[in-house]
Image (tube, rainbow, N blue to C red):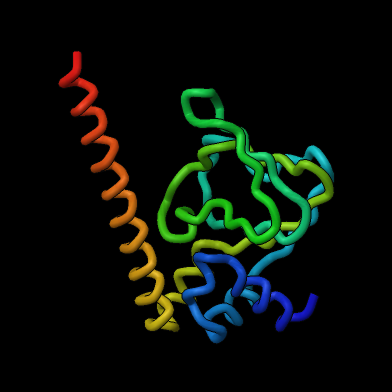
Length: 155
């Protein structure tokens, strides 16, 4: 695929859409494409993560270690897997298994951080997007707390 095609593809990924074309060009140049056969494991739950993956073609089954850690999830084209690993040290929360022939684009944490250093406007846009997400999660948790508090009063 061409560099311009990769940039256009990255623009469709919500987390990357806020970064802008110049920043996405850096990611597209430095990214690594991996082709997986059906059933191939991309990474295992509990492994150290050093970057994120964007599903370009096919899909990944994300399987947590146990039901207590969540349910299985399928990540299809345009999905960003390992978003947090782009910014900080973390471990993989699930095992990622190709559900069929799958192509992923790997972006290392070091590449992502260098891009943010070189494009402060992209870093600011990303910070703003993350802040909006955290605000939304905080409101949702507040609603859950209120519902739980009301449930406890009726006992």
